[in-house]
Image (cartoon, rainbow over all chains, first blue to last red; front, side, top):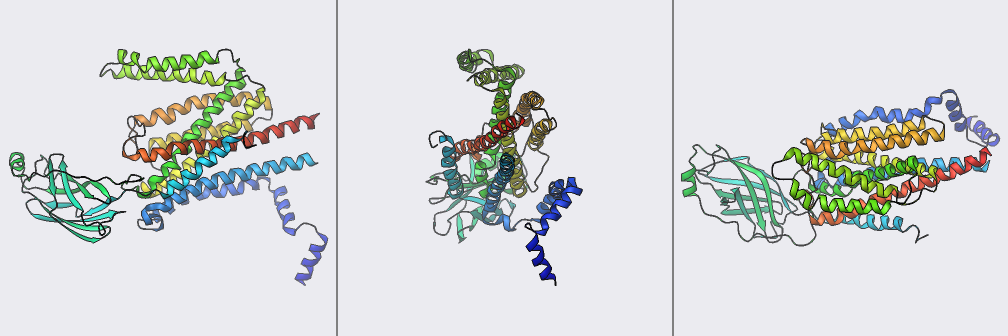
Length: 100
Length: 416
């Protein structure tokens, strides 16, 4: 029963059902785009907890703290990647606009 | 494409060896810890020494000293090697110590031909019952620090607490250098937007800047500044700094004719955005580093809070621009704000942190990136690292600039 419904849905709708859900949420809750930044901001105090829990001799302190250097390089990489993702999205939006 | 974008390839060519050498060059060997913290005088004491990156077992010629100052040393008469990184050293400690303190602290010095010398400051305190400096001097065994070895090859300095994280100098510090350079470029572009200067006097500005530096930091400085004139020194240096910076900036502002005002504003915005990116990366990497060296991600260090304020100032720039719909208003207010923000950035990052004690190296005085935190081997990688990361930032801002140009051109066409 369930599977057949799904198949029929797939047959009639070109976009997956989740797309409608996202659209509905965006329409009725326009501030939803602040959700992710909000969650990240609320997680910031966790950094303190993490710092307190990571006691001497833990993973990051092994091999003369070399993993701290690895973590640093990862942080820089993530920052640049996130910036590039945002830029990429802006460019695709412009592309879509120019095509219309 | 290769010829036009040579600097992009240069940034990659610089960053690859920076990251590779930054990870691969070994640290000098050092003394990580010693036990116990205090020994009694007039007795035979054993010190358990823990080395880092050391070769005590393969090199049997390790020697150890306890040093009060350059004149008074005790040499270990017996050394038992336990492993590559652990030795026990026996010291015959005299009855009286030539010091006016009851328990003066000694520096531990180790030396062997493979690892070179290494030392641990304030390794052990020696407790004496009575102070008798004259007798101590007479009875002290005359020991010289001789035949000290230096480790060959490319190495980074060993620092306690830091250990391998000294390599972060090539990843955390260039973020801030790059950020300041990008903000300076944005400041220049904002000026060019606001005033659309002519190029008539550009060489006058450059030559007068060089002349002022040659005269002001050369003969005039030694004529005006005498020993102990602190207030005069501060006034002199601030006036010199402001005028040299102003002339230098004037040269950059007038370096080429302004073809399009709008483009200068777009450049300023893109440069500020990638500057903020580097600043955020600098703060985050600093937080990670601080967690494992200072114990927590955010301390009450003046430099941290000053850089946080600087970042907020530039976030304010982005918010201010986005709060106006009109492109012209955005550009005018943005460039005025950008100029003021950069003028505020200099005291925040370069003056205030030098006036207070700080956990950062080289603060509370004149930093100048000196001492044992940045030796010549590290400089060889550190300066290219600054150039490489800054060029990467410029590359990112160039991408965003090209996007803005396309978007604006398309918007104009659409409005027609």
